[in-house]
Amino acid sequence: MDAVASMLYLDYGKKEGQWLPNKYGGNENLDAIEFFKHLNSVLHGAYPGFLTIAEESTAWPKITAKPEDGGLGFSFKWNMGWMHDFCEYMKLDPIMRKGDHNGLTFAMSYNSAEKYILPLSHDEVVHLKCSMVNKMPGYKVDKYANLRVGYTFMFGHEGKKLLFMGQEFGQEHEWNEATELEWWRLEEGKDDNYLNIGMKYYVQRLLEIYRSHKCLYEIDDDWSGFEWINADDADRSIYSFFRKCPSQKKSLLFVLNMTPVKREGYRVGVPVRKQYKLLLNSTELVFGGAGETSVPEVLRAKKGECDKRDQYIEFDLPAYGAVVFEFNL
Image (cartoon, rainbow, N blue to C red; front, side, top):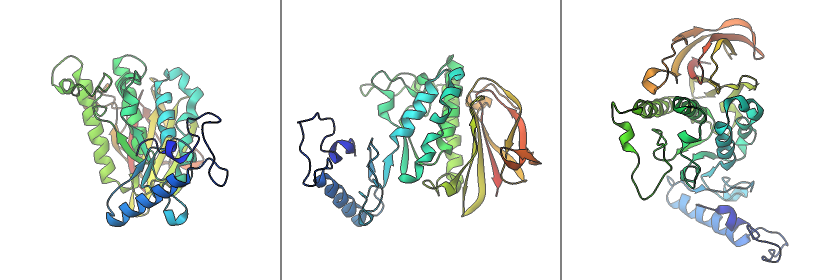
């Protein structure tokens, strides 16, 4: 449901004198509130599998809480704050990203307020905003490397995922409803199409990992499913965190390098002194990367203090590299 905020507020987009307060003197649209509660109650009561999703751009509380608990009853809310912060961060030249490091960490501070969807929708790839890949800085190969790391962050972050069509293989022109998608970019052996083919395979691999690991979706609105390893490595623009869930021992460790600088001997504090199996390396040739093979297939955690933990793993973190390890808690 689009533009929910314009229905919830009597004064939304209006100047003084253009609106009247409700019977309690506030700016809440009481009729709209009751309509949403009734709509969602009826839909979810009659069709339990249905999802209702609110595109709501303000901090109105309890969008996804049950009506009997004072909420509006939507299944999910688009996380417009995450979308804005993510896009603004990813557009930055890598040398400037350390100044906006909290742009990618801030959303977790309010993540438990609602049941969120992380939206990279049609709104982000129209009206001269560029396609997702052309938001990225640098030469063409840098743009695709950036986007692979960005998508990995999106898939690892709590919240359901929404990726608009064409962006899964790196369409370069803005979306145009009058023409078809740039399917020709997936034809083998043409110019730089290997980058688009690689992006398609990369998103496919992300989805395979997502579907096979409950820790990525079972707990999406609570800190019990997400834990930062290092959210403060701003100087090197590196993020590390892991996802976990109670129903499965398998957990996933994410380490993301948002700069074109390779970090040799990079140490990451880890939660347990066990083996860490490499599941994903964004720089592999099959994904359109440079073929960086410096990350071992299996790492054993070593004893020693790192990131305020008692054990760590150490490896060469590739430039614009996103690596994901599987381990058992």
